[in-house]
Length: 481
Length: 95
Image (cartoon, rainbow over all chains, first blue to last red):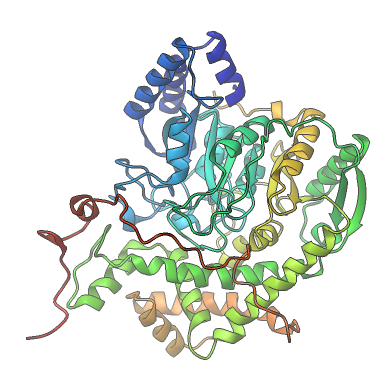
């Protein structure tokens, strides 16, 4: 299993052919994806055409850059011109976008070969990909277990060697958590770092476009090629994008690492606790200083998130009305048509969240729920600001448990609690990354989460890279046959 | 926690045609989730400014100039029902 930088370096040297590599990935998907269920749509013809164009550029010694010819998978939440895009929902079963999302346009401009669209929890609402309206996705490390979610198809594709890298979206942990469950790298950059234009919206103040990769150099490459201001997204940040690969110095000497007490309490799997503490010791061995910090509002994160995200979702999903696109179920009048369409088109979790959000925003409850959640969001932000006065990055577990079995978390609240360590960075928009940091006794991957300052992805990547290079975890791959 | 009447009201606001069994299940599940969320009430937030967004933003403006956009055909291509250049919807106003 080769990384993106290994592949494109080989293309540049003439040691590998983009077309042959694309064919290898497509053959592997054909042979193995029936087991994994990572892809909803495979774009074979488009991928081969893009690979042929990349090959011609390498022959002419004029590649577009370090992603030229790289075989990449995209979560089915990104609009792709002319290619069915479902967001994992029946209501968009037949939707074919007339335009490309900015992330897709930038990847194409960089020469990436898009292999297809990956499975996800419906409208990115979930932590297991079991809420997809279409199929189950299986964890390549143990096919009886979930890959995490909502970007489970993207994480499983990378872990299973069905794509060299991938993009998902992270709203409350939807890239970091599946990265941890599947033993790959997942990074949520600062809110607004990568344009959301053309991303099918879930919760607009929380949605982040985020890469999934086999190693940190690939994360740096994908982030560098896609970050930056976009006039089509009014919330995209207008700040310079540094050379993230150049930031990977290999050294963490002098880096101050904070370890928040609240992330190591009740509910944390003891094997994860141990693995993450060993990882933090390793950062200290490498020259970082480590100190305890406190983020007292951590325990309120999940409750706050499950008001803010459903509230925003209830508004965003109002657009699915059986008029402009997607499913329509006839009714006796307009409202009846809309209500029947939404009842038939949305799955149970989406209905729950639309209901919860509508309730939290409704007359009489607005201030007690939504207003209070927004004020708590300020307290969460202040906790981080205080911690970052003393430290440069925070080190925590990514998840409280390893990948669970399909069907194990049938209770919605039990599923929500899986996001306890990823939600705070989502609500504050801080960059955060999950890096493989070992395996439990059953051989299931464990993730170390590093959280950084606003727009300081470079420090985060430098720390994650130094750790990765000093440990064997990123080189371990599951065997799918 | 949340009454059946409230659930029916919210379902109407949400434009979701739920049947009896779904409404009852929703009442149970929302009650469980809201009971958990109620822990937020214990936090004193008097005088705390709300955060609606991770990044401080002011109004983002652009020039009011013509830009390329989708053609009518492209915009209508995914419509479940159309009439010429328009989306077709069920009649709203009675004769």
